[in-house]
Length: 357
Image (tube, rainbow, N blue to C red):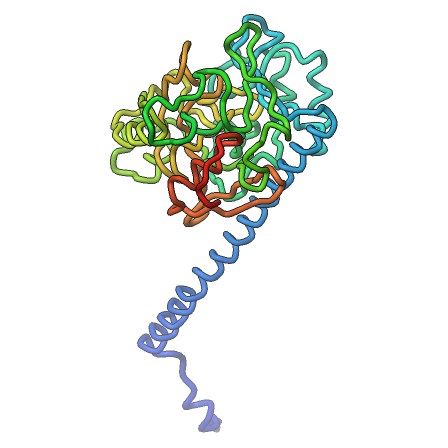
């Protein structure tokens, strides 16, 4: 039998050697390493843009509410009956962000708000289904965490102002405790003196372009021992801070080392958008700088958190700062290194600070 000789080209063909294969893999790895940060940066830029758009929609809803009702939406602090049971300003904004169906599902508006971290005993079942709906306008896409199943979570809060009026470093320059907050949030109660008057355009004497209305924060569950995780330390709530000025209150919070109780739900910030409870995310404070620590505080008679007084900082997952909705309807990205006086001045509507904003 005659043997057939293979062509020389075929006889000389061979596969990759191991060294060649490893070189190719290394080159691919380098390329992926170079491209991945750019892809991640592009994705974050898209998320940040959507986050800014959410804030913009909330601010437009605030203006539409004012046009319709002659005032910005109020939140309800702790009442003595279910009829006055802790609805947030967001409930009143539903009709202005194309969520009328959820608002109508509340019926006579009795029964109370919803928060998954506090159970059915504190959240009457009549409203649970409606208020456990996810409202995408209330959630920043850069926030990856959730409380419960995440349906009722929110990552934006209304500005309640600073702990003291200007000048913020002078002892004794306090606002009136639980009433007359100097931001945009207004908390009412069935019985005086616990309650703010409604905020209107006319009461923003510092100027709408210089006054913050809404900002964002990071949703984070209770984690207990987080001493080695700076990111979690930032998004938890620390113990009670006190002081005779805005500057003293901020420093007191920065000095706190113990976390506030987890079992009481005071660190369940962002669990339910319908609840006005400050510690559950109903409002944020301009006392602390962007992305600083957050603390509980006693600020006036009866404690602060039920009626809007607290030291919960604006926070975000965006590198370097937070999105802030201004009362003229614009949205700013405020960096973490903003000057204290500028941030405090942005937080107040009627204190006449001279700091450039």
